[in-house]
Length: 67
Image (cartoon, rainbow, N blue to C red):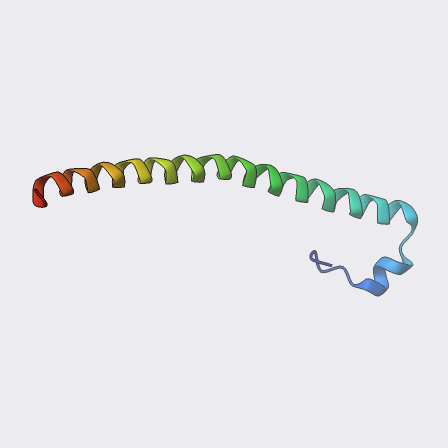
């Protein structure tokens, strides 16, 4: 397991301990997914802005140099 818990120890652990470990793992995964969702919005916005700026520069370059 990613937290260093070995399979044999997990198999021998009581049900309550297993449930606690699985809950902690689920919550950690949820937090990571939420952070990625927020980053996705930022990445999409940044890439859109880069495309707009690049398009404007291309139009200016075409107008200035290829008359």
